[in-house]
Length: 96
Image 1: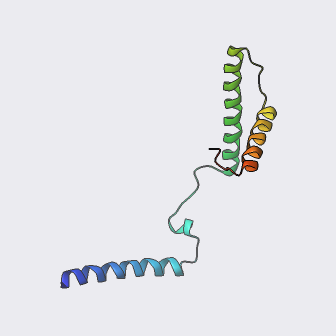
Image 2: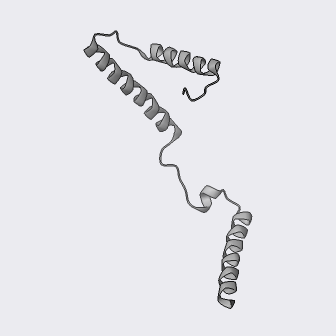
Image 3: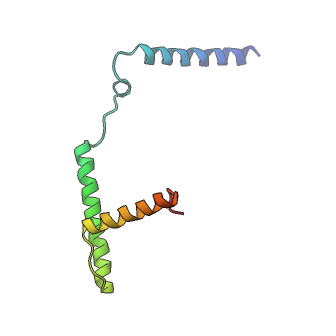
């Protein structure tokens, strides 16, 4: 029984020390664990733009093979916006 109490007591002390360090640390949480983002927000935005461009190009390749007219980004955005409005109108946010 004393081993269980000793183990629980040590665990409580360790959690308490960690919480005290976190509470009284002057820097941010990211500084405490030395966390740095892997990419800047500008790089993330550029990656998103590139992804959309590549997806539109891939869809247009498939559409060309079928003989359908190509889509540009504005037309695709308008189509997605219309679908989103329809989902909201139906009250179905997940499109089921």
